[in-house]
Image 1 (cartoon, one colour):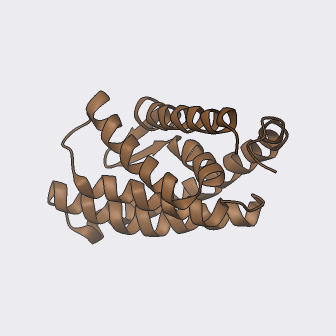
Image 2 (tube, one colour; image 1 turned 180 degrees about the horizontal axis):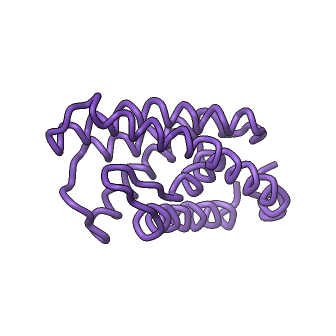
Length: 172
C-alpha cells in the first residue's frame, strides 16, 4: 500500500466521521422520544469501506464529538456503546462484500433490533425513568418505517457509488 492511498483512506475516514455527525445531529426529525436521522448512511459507507473495528471506533468518536459539538440533552454512555455496536454490525455484514439488497437489509434490520429496539429503548427507559415496555411500541413503529426506508436509501447509494469508489481505488 503506498502513502497516497493511505492518506486518501484516512481523509475519507475523517470525511465520513464529519458526515455522520452532520447527518445524525443536524439533519433529523424528532418525535418526542423517537428520532429519525440519516447518520446510517455514513455508518453504512464506513462499515463497507473500513470494516467492523474502525466503524465501531468511528461510532464512538462520532457520538462523543456530536454530543460535545451539538449537545442535545444529557450525555449517557449507553448511547455511545450503541453507536459503537451499530458500526460493528454494519462493518461485519458489509465489509469486503458486495452490498446486495439482502445484505443491506440484514445490516439495517439487525441494527434496528439490537441497537434501536433493545439497547436504545433500555437507555431511554433508564435515563428518563420510563417503563421499557411503555416506550417500546413507539420505537417498534419507528423501526417498521425506518427499516425499509434505510434499506432502500443505502441500496441506491451503494448502487451509484460503486463506480466512483472503484475509480478512486477504494474498492476492487
